[in-house]
Length: 159
Image (cartoon, rainbow, N blue to C red; front, top):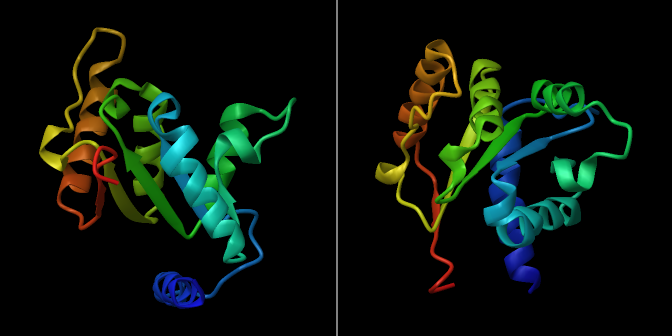
């Protein structure tokens, strides 16, 4: 177990070594589709980063009653060093997931994609009529960029 922990710390140490760590409220912003991954991947990432003494942001664990949703999330994205985007089969159906992903990229944060039960080639932004055309273009550009970023894959049926 100790070996595994030191390997993880080494990996994340490399990620954060590129820039000086600050005393921001958030080092890692976890972007995810709650109904697909909150109880497994996103929650496990949050717990793991916390044990490594990193400050992760996961809306379900980092926000308190009364917090302003967009204000708190936007501040966490601006403050973070890395954005972890956890893609799942229903990810692209969420305006909020796509908006957060775009913000992470527009803030020039490093994005590490994790593909859970979905292949990068399966990610598609569909026009369901509820989103302005300008937003659809923004979302599609972000997804196209992520598809060309080296990430991690996880198949929940095989562990």
